[in-house]
Image (cartoon, rainbow, N blue to C red; front, top):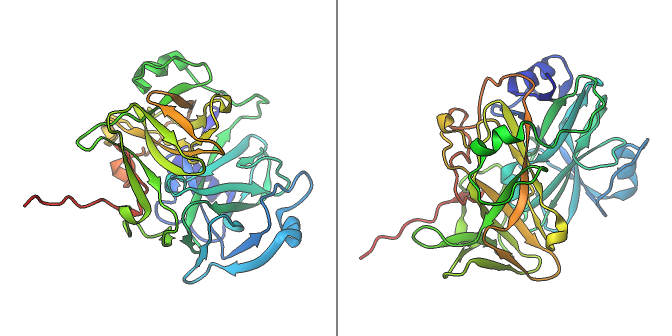
Length: 370
């Protein structure tokens, strides 16, 4: 079957050298329907983001654009805010003409506002690797809110593979839409044939009416490889609703919000979140868009899993209304039944999540009443 390759099919690609690795895979690197990509030993600070273009390699462009070279081996290095870095990855590809790939930031990467995209030789689009590509992969990294400490082996991006069996067709927007709608999402929003709509929750719920977090400026460094190492209040300002059903986004501020709906990705599917039409507002939603098979699936511990949204308004303040559609979930079938699902069995961080920051932050302790 055509479709997204599950974990055991990715393992076959590694064995067949379709995916070429500088080092053996790390524990947990192969996800239920994707592969984490590891940073290599050096980073190149460049003057600007770029695409190499047809017939041009990334290394050729680096000769013109590199300002300085940074080693990531050993203790690693800090990547500063608003700077652009290119890092060769430890994985390269040797795809045949029935196999293509696409990439996205990992969930934790997006929730830290680390803008990360993957490019390859001859590419004319970010995060897209065409069928038949043979060559290296590179991460373009631009931290936008927090400086981050990374090292060789850090995993900021993930890659999915699509088996197209030689068919020259456009990527399907949604498979079996009517069948999936009822069991995928509980929503009173309108249906769109470009995917299952996802809306934002900015009306308070729970004891404290917490609706989200706004990132602080001038913070310390976050170590990408150190879970639960940071205090939330050192980096984030909690936002409470105070009874209103909207949130005014300040220009160029970064927010973490949650969807109104609970998301369910059945075991035989993978999903990706894509932004809603940008013409409805000058804001950006979503940096990390992959949802693995089993996300929100009750048997794997995911009942009630929300979609966490990374939101930024550009240039002007923007009012985000409760229930406003901000993205769509695009579903595709897996090429074959999966052998493992997202969830408690593989130690997934965000199963059964509500509003949740990245894994780097410790929960705020509950103070005892006197």
